[in-house]
Image (cartoon, rainbow, N blue to C red):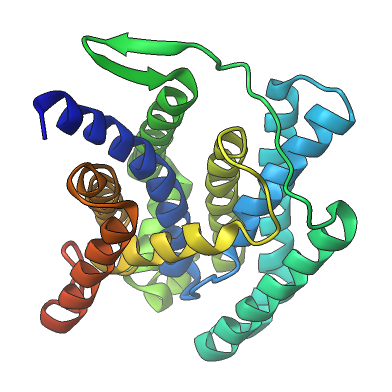
Length: 286
């Protein structure tokens, strides 16, 4: 195992980390504001990929236009889910969890009925290969890395300096106290769902150009996202970033010496150990 192989593994791992962070931060945002584990979040990622496919391949729009439409569509879908599906179950996380499982089947079957089960694909405009010394990184993967960490930085700045972001932070720390201070829980929940789904849409739109699209493609990324938020700490956005980096680098580096399957095994073994010995996660609190 040479130095070049390790560095190539790091680059590959950062690509995976960019995807996992976008998914996990959306999950953490919804969990911290709405107290709901939104298990159909992987299907939001899948729907975004199919929307890009429809508008870029079938409708003939540019990738950029289709990508923007996909983010808007899944963001609005998030608002609708919050208002009509999850809001009535606020304070009842068990029922909301079961409901989100049902949504997985609903979304998969809707896409299956519309698009069929044959894998789909589309091209992105990012076709060049970046050469860094003896390393190679496709521009598609570079865009995923950059987009992931730029958007997460923007989200941190939003939470730190925007009044809505500060209100979200207050809700995540003390929901009842925030409501007594006049913070509109309903509006902030809708914003959280929009942002969380839009982040998943960015990941789905970019990744869809790398891999084939299927109605079941959200399952793997959801499992990775859950592993990330358990590792980093449930509801912790900084923890989701750290967890995403750890899981992503494991996925990039372990195959250098063993196999992809072993990488997945190592990642989930670490999550199990975290649950056993530090159940609040690396960045969470008791």
